[in-house]
Length: 412
Image (cartoon, rainbow, N blue to C red; front, side):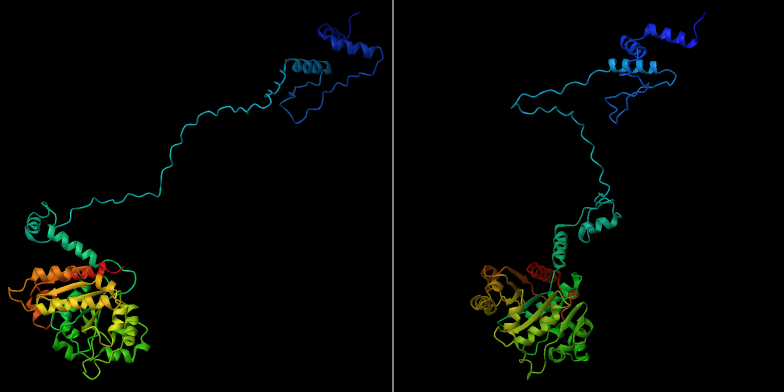
C-alpha cells in the first residue's frame, strides 16, 4: 500500500536530516518531552550584526531549523580583541592623508580700480602747450615745478581733526605782519575745503579787514568789530549768528579790530579766549593778527591758545634783530615750544640796499625756528592797500603757499 504524501515527505526528509535533528525526533517518539521542539525560532534582538536574519517558510518547521543551523555554522566568529602588553604605549593607526581643500573664493574682494590710472596732465609751460596742441596724444606729464605745486596744495588741504590757531606777531611794525596774515588767509581759503577765519587782535587800530576788502568797501560796510562781538557773544549759538559780526573776502572770514583808539587796547586775555572758544566751534583754522609787541593785554591769551606762530621779520637790520628778540623772549617766558616750532617770514617790503647780506640774516634766523620762508618784494604787498592774490607775482603766491603748508603741517 502506498504511503501517504506526508509520510513520503517525512521519509525523504529523514534521509537528509542532520544527526541532532534525528535525535530530537526519536526522543519525542519515546515520550521524552524535556526537549520539545516548538517549531519557532529564537527571538531576534536589536543587535543585527551578531544574529543574522533568517527567512522562514511556514510550510515546514524542519526546513526552518535546518536553515538556522546551517547559518550558525557558516557565520565566522567575531575576532577576539587584541591585547596590549602592560606598560606599552597605545598605538594609533595613521590616518590616511587628506587632500588639501581648495580655498573658497572671496566673494567680497573687489578690484582696486576698474579704470587704468592716467598720467597727470601738464597745465602750463611747453609740456602743457604740447599736450593741448596734440589733443592729449603727447603727454609728458607735469614738470617738477608743477609737481611741487600739487604737493603744496595737498599739504594745505589736509583734513584736520579739531580747531587750530596760528598767531602772527612781531616786535616791529611795518614789516609785513598784516599783509602776511591776509595773503596766507586767502591762500588757505583757496585750497581748503573749509573756510578759515582771521581775527584782528591788534590793539593799535588794526587794518586787517581793510587789507582784505579794500578801504573803500570796508567803509561802506556795516561797522562790526570785535567789540560788538564781545557784547553779544553769549547769544551766539550758531554760525549764522556769528556771521553777523564778520566780514567776508571771498571764502576768508574776518573779524575786524576795534578802530576807536580809546577802546582798541582794552581787549583782555580772558575776552580773547572767549572769542577763540566761539570760533573753534565753527572753524578748523584761525589766524590771529596780534599787532606789534608781545606784552599787551590780550597777548597772554593769544599765546596760551596758539598752536603755532608766524614771526614777521624784514631784511632791514632792525627787523632781523627784532625777530631774533621775539624768539628769545618767547623761549625765556615759558613758550619755548612755540619758539622752536615757529615759522619766520621775512618780507622784502622795502627793498633794502645791496649792503645788507640777506643770506647771513636768513642763516642766522633759520637756526632758531622750525622753518624760514622769504617773501620777495611785490608792489601788491608793499603799497599797504588791498592784498589780492590775482595781482601778486607768482613768486609771492608761491611763498604764501609755502607758509600755509607749513602752518597746516604744524597742526597735530
